[in-house]
Length: 529
Image 1: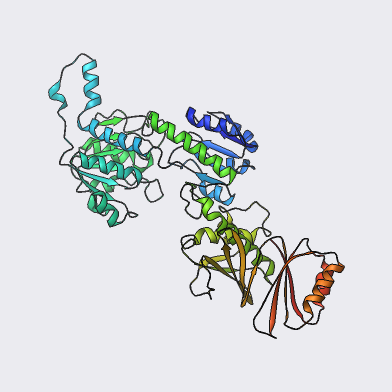
Image 2 (image 1 turned 120 degrees about the vertical axis):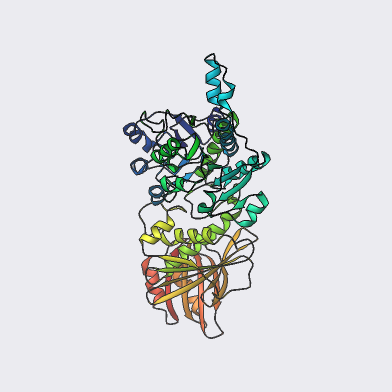
């Protein structure tokens, strides 16, 4: 039974999903201080948070059973992702669940600040009637500069275009084709700033984007620009923006997010008459809260069950929702290839090359590489290893891995070829799935065969002469080691032969020593898959 701790408020719909899970239970305890959280988190396999709980390295280290941290929302700056990755803990979020709500909030702020909606309301409520004091600005015909054109940015662009605005966008990860289809013009940031009448922020918080709205960038903006931020508070240098607002360089700002939430009383933006404030309402709609809650509950349960890893931020490869079941058989095969390499290598493997062939595996190189590393390292590390921490652990053990071209291929569809090298040697293994589900080893260096990568494998290399199979079979029988399956490949008649023998149990050292004494046998190795 999986135990899940919900440490921040989660919509009732998400809690109902967790209640319905027959293989999981949950506790909802919000407002925990760090000391309390450290004391209780060791009992849980999963942790669900919003922005209120800080999941730092101490919390992750204390969570000795933790396998998943789920963020009900988009931003994960309250979670130490590098620390989670080292510990093999999945970190996931819900990037699409609140996109519409956030985009609509950005448009709401843009309109409200342009038409003085909040201050006009307050004036009328106070018994005043000052129409002339609240003459606004139309969005129509104005230029909107989007800093970030991902999910939310594109939704804002669609809505701004409907208002008759011209839209410029800065996003180094968006192609010209996507921008053209959307109807926006891609520009560099230094070209966007002086052209935009409105600037709306929709980029992730990264070291290079923190305080990107600062004194220098404000100096490049058009006189009288309006700035809207419904993304992350730390994108703005508050003191610099306050200075721009006071000087008139920035005509107005609409702010939904803050560097510190709630903002401290000395926040320089509070109290300025040309700033519209809302308390982080971007995702606060009934529809968004329902989607965020159910999506994170479903994702966390699927990750715990190992059936899907959608929106896992620290997975070394991308998985679209519902697609993991299709690629999992190939990853299991890759893991077997890694374990076989580990068992057969003469020394510790230092470098791995991966090549794939076929439509079904063409886009899976990163996933296959991670799985190979799991097999290669599982008996060399003393911590649980999974797709998350395998690349990190490989680097710590001095193992490099890359995609290759030109490793000798066989004529199989959806072939995975893996070459491992160590000081003074290398080996090439190839594997396929028969019927889309049956894994087979089809290549060991120059030898061709069709062997099942399962259980205990005895690998023999010998001179291709009569009597070897009989001798080996007799010796194994003497030590009561049963043969499950025997596959044989050879380079040429009378040359060298390779035996891939599946055994029902691991053979004792004595039988391996006896086999090595057989005159025709040149090599004996055992791998447990």
